[in-house]
Length: 471
Image 1 (cartoon, rainbow, N blue to C red):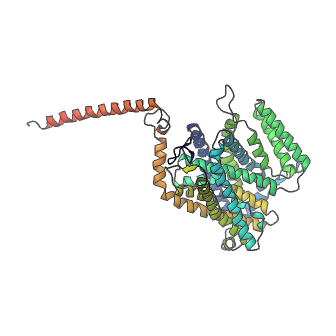
Image 2: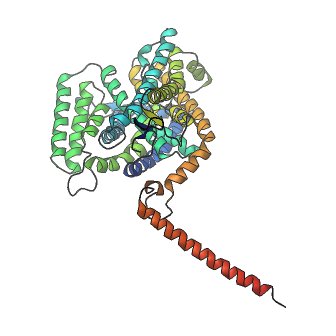
Image 3: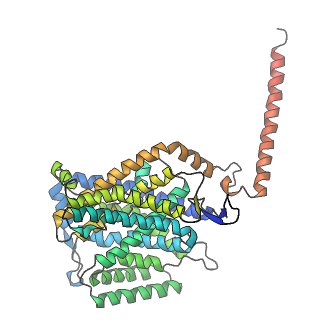
């Protein structure tokens, strides 16, 4: 929605927080989130299967599969199945995240600095506050503060999976806000992983990875096409990044950011949109669920759950996700609106921002990844942190579900209004309110309906008169 005049002064201009999306942006968002919703459902299923395998008689078989190693040892790629899922498959997830970020910067919510400021402030606060909550619990209890980044990320697929289970639809503005939060979170997570959770950097391998990325960019922007060129090149870049000591998923984000989002003459879709359309189902439907299958399998016995609520590190993760994310995102949004020339969309309320803030506390995929990276030397603490991620995400989902259910009737009416297409031209009516031709079409439709009702009234009147006659 474009900026509008301030109601009070009539002079200064105010941007609208959670305003209506442009039609093209809304269609792209709907397609992307439809795939993520299916992926989120699969992610939930994979997490449940992992928990069942880890806590039943099949736990030995499950651990054997996770620990099975394969791959060329000479290339430092003799990895376990769990590591292949974490370092390999999850690169697809971060590739899509990089593509999303590039599109948001070029054509999405983040292209306008004034509009981008609000979700960026919310997202940054939603990362800083959970980290501070974790540090407060860990340092106060004499625990390991190395896991400070665990509760910082939002899992968009898991959040949408929860929405699918609840049967709650969100207006497009709220869905866009949730997606933007997740995209900025993913960017922050990648920076944190690259800076704080990479060790033993091999600058030769890193230089090779950077050179490979340069070749990738050059070929792509020269218009070279063909998966047989880019897939082998991407594998080489990934392998070099893995060997460098920088987490291999950084290669995925870097390649995603290099894709071209602009259109050239004769193109109907940009290369970034086309490639994302191909890769997103693999990420949401295969890579992330498989990662969850091998990462979420932690013991949840009574003793383990007791540890979650007694250890300073796990308490920091739980309250970081449940309280830190909610307070950070909500407080950041409120402060940004309060201290800038912005106003909340009049069709929504702060309770809706609270619902999205609570949903942002569902930090599954990236939180599990950082749990492994933060406590590589303490497998027990890593598993306890993972259990805390599951508990914190579950509690955040329950809290968000309660808020969403309270607002469900309002959301249904908003979704119906923004999808209504009475003239049947394929464009929702809310996007044509300023088009005179739309109003002429609607007038013709209503006149035709009125004529039909007058005809039916006359027929009914003649029928009634005939029935009142003598037998």
